[in-house]
Length: 193
Image (cartoon, rainbow, N blue to C red; front, side):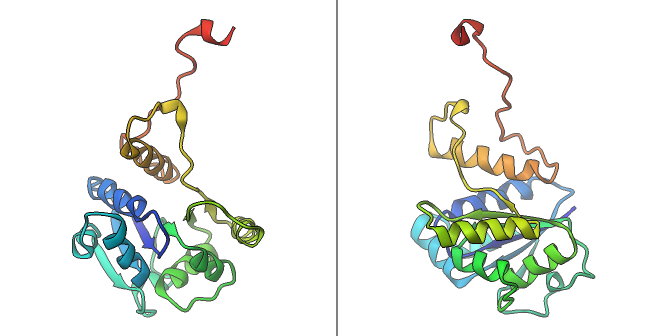
């Protein structure tokens, strides 16, 4: 399997980092990483990671300015793309086919080739314009996967929430990294009576 991971300049770069960490453990998955300058800045602002260490998690690293990269062409076969996090600017560019960067060009290619594109939009709140962009992206075929917490897992840490969401994103590609606590129904039947 070959997946593109795009990281744009929204809060929540930990989702992209954790995706890359999980995919690094999957021997049959080849990753192609592309990051915006703002994503690199947010790595430094939001995490203890260095940009260089995050870049090392990808099997192949592409400059966001390199529109001639392999992932910019539909003839280069991939199984899809995840943009995590997805800034509203990036969402707008994807929705409007404004391919002025490799992240957007690769996403546009994934959509035109009818491959799976998963967008992990920035934090709340969202105004109507943001919601309209998300709606239009879904009409184009993108899957919108905002980082909404699953409280039934009874998270104890922020990592529990991040891992579960990353696991649910990878579920969309048939990859079970062991992060998801699967719902098995109520454990105490008396609790629902």
